[in-house]
Amino acid sequence: MNVIPNIGSTVRKSVDFIERISSNSDICHGKPCIKGTRIPVYLIVSLIAYGEDIPSIIQNYPSITHDDITASMKYAAQLCKYEAYAI
Image: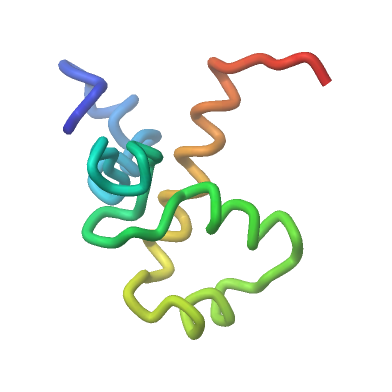
């Protein structure tokens, strides 16, 4: 599901994660996942945040690629632009 319609090519390059991230209410309670898997984006972002390296993540989750991990990080970065929480 493309949630950002009618995007110009300049902006589109910065949101290319849309091709690799999906959300389906029947999979992982609708949490964004790497497309074609049940691996939630938050898991990948958390692994990176706690120091796991990309080759190790790919070894542990062989159904994902380096590009999927990059897309997860871009997705998280995009969310940070629009979400604000008290810390």
